[in-house]
Image (cartoon, rainbow, N blue to C red; front, top):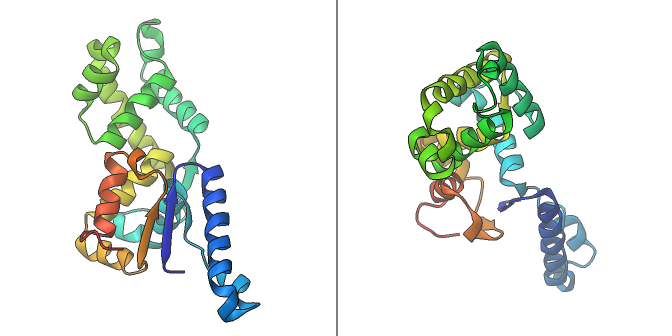
Length: 207
C-alpha cells in the first residue's frame, strides 16, 4: 500500500499491476501461504499519471483552490468546450486559417506539459499558427476561465494542478509521506511536468 506505480495508459496500468501482484505472490507464498494473495491486493496506488493525479487532487483539493467534486473532461469533451468558447469569441468566423478546436487544445496541452510559453510553443511546434498568438492567448485564457466556472478540469489540468500542489513544500511532504517507493514504467517517456512531480515526490532520489 506504500508503493506508488505510475504509467501512461490504462492498458499499461492493468498489466503493470498484474505483474506486480504476481511478483508479490511468488515472493510471499512460501512465508505467508494463502495470505500472500490477499496482501497483493493492497497494491492500490497503481495507475496512469492522470488517474493517480485525479485521486490525489480530490484529497488535497481545498489546498489548491479546487472543489473536491470537480468533474474531468476527456479529450473530446475538452475540445468541444474549447470550440464553444472559440465560437462565442468570434474566432470560428475568421476563416479556415484560424486553428480549429483540436489544434487549439493541442497547443494548450503542449504548453502545460512542457511548461513552455505560448510563443515558444507556437514557434517550435505550431509555426503556421504564430500569427494568431494574441488571439490564441485570449482564447486559452477564456477556456481556462470557463473550466473554472463549470468546476471542471481536462486531462492536462490533472497534471498541472498536481504539479502546483507539489510546489508547496508542506503539501509535497504530506503526499510523499504516503509512499516508500515510486516506480515509473518507461520513465524516459515522462514529460517536463511529470518529471517535476516525480522529483518533488522523491527529491533525494531515494525510493
